Image (cartoon, rainbow, N blue to C red; front, side, top):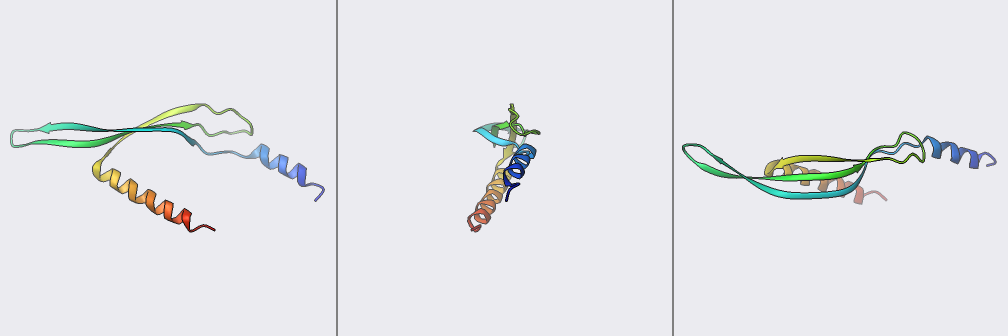
Length: 94
């Protein structure tokens, strides 16, 4: 018990945190695709996230970076389904 304060300080100094979501924005884009036989409207979701960089040292100020990606309707459905599974697993933790 006498070493508890020193142990806590040592652990706090060596803690590394993974990237953290700071901001999130999205929009739906409709791209038109055409050829001689047909014309299609193809919806995609454009996602932009601002992520705080992971820290390598305790109390280090981490910068941020933007991460951008596009998803098809099918890929978005798969992502939402996977996030639902994660949510359900977290809900089951005591």
